[in-house]
Image (cartoon, rainbow, N blue to C red; front, side, top):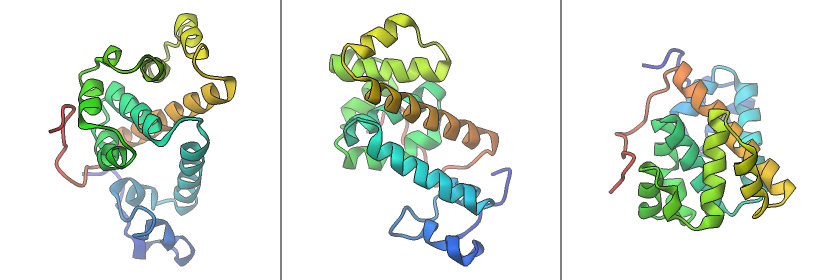
Length: 177
């Protein structure tokens, strides 16, 4: 049970109702929660969209980072939300399983270092060694994008935990079929 009311599209002031339209992402519980503060919902969606487009990663690699952050934080909600989004971006079930089992070394070296960095970031443990490994494969613009993407999903996961936002469906699991 969420700790705040879950708002529906019709509950929002008219100028914000489009944020929960079917052509956006609909009435997902994360947005229904943020619907208690429509200007924040709008800003959250704009910021997230900017990160998605400008983080310097492909859609697939972006989704892999989101999965790595979700797994590191045990954020079932974020993992579940990105299960379909990730597949549409080209993430395979096998790649999800690898992340779910935290066996990042089985992935390509270029993406595994990004995922290790993202997980270290959310733990507050980015070392000079992991940063240098990332720097060998990515430029400063991309590194900032990766850090900001990880920070966005860290903040999102913490909000989901704090407000006990429920899943819409049964959890697919860290090792999905």
